[in-house]
Image (cartoon, rainbow, N blue to C red):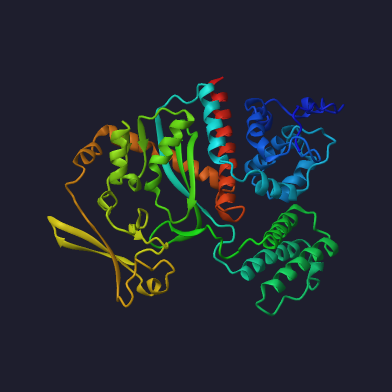
Length: 484
């Protein structure tokens, strides 16, 4: 249960924080900037208020997740660092001598307390609210884009994935302790996953009991990752077939297996809305949702900037009805689409190809018709994949020797938008789109958004929520320092 009343820390050592945590420490600044009581208000219904042992304060549990996003740490490494990093303990509202939680508590908190809670929208709206209160959001412009995140387990078999993680541990140990050569257990000869899993447990035991380098960070980090993988498997997560991950395409020649996060960002580089989807989803379909979420968060919008993926006819009509300028260069294929078909294919603007609902990209395309009239593009798909596709019903006709998808090119359509994109105003606004590319890079590199930290869309939404919250808070702190 959680207490109905706030508790006060009466430790005689609390004054240490004033001596060792500087005023410009980021975690101190975040604590002073954000009233985290909104987390308690949202989570009260998930706890009993009258029975059971006192639970770890929900705000503290949430702050653990926030630290994980800020510093890109595994659960075990996060808890280990929380034992000795006084800035962490200060941020967590702990006494210097207080014991930290067990790493398994974080897993339970994510799975049991954050279910059925729209954490992504809640956290983004909170940061937008803070930015508005501080007078930092002055523009009426958002830039939209999507960034991809690879599934944690990619498309490897369970055995291959376990082999990779145990190999990383052995390699790290050998580099620091040559005496461990020959001391690891014999590798399993069969293809049984259970034997590979048991081998991984033996590797962990061998490192912890026989190696002298188990506590060195280079080894310990790899060991903690292997432990988490073993724990995930024991909790019935799938290594090779993340139920929610899908194949998406970055270009005609490259693909990824995972998820997409569709983002709207203000001109001040504060993320105002986000939608997490599976990897095969088209960017352009989420423009309206991003605009509506940004407005719900408190943004006024008169301009939206995006690449050609957002120039669907529906988006152009929506922009006109909602009275904002859509700075998205027309693409004749995207703009016209089909609209009337029973099964819709998505256009991948990076590859210049259509993708079927199952995530398979067209192999090639051909232009047909006269140059000035009734031209169309026909996209050809791999018929062998269509024959065995689980989504072939209604899409593939049994016995067919080919599978194509055609769209009509109407070069005279959308004359108003075509004229607008040639203006100096359009070109000047379009030049601001680079900002969101830099934001995507920030999410991926310092904050670990390049790879999912758990399986499933729910886990990806939690990762997205905490990562965007952390990135927005850091941006707000920077803007505030520039104002001083």
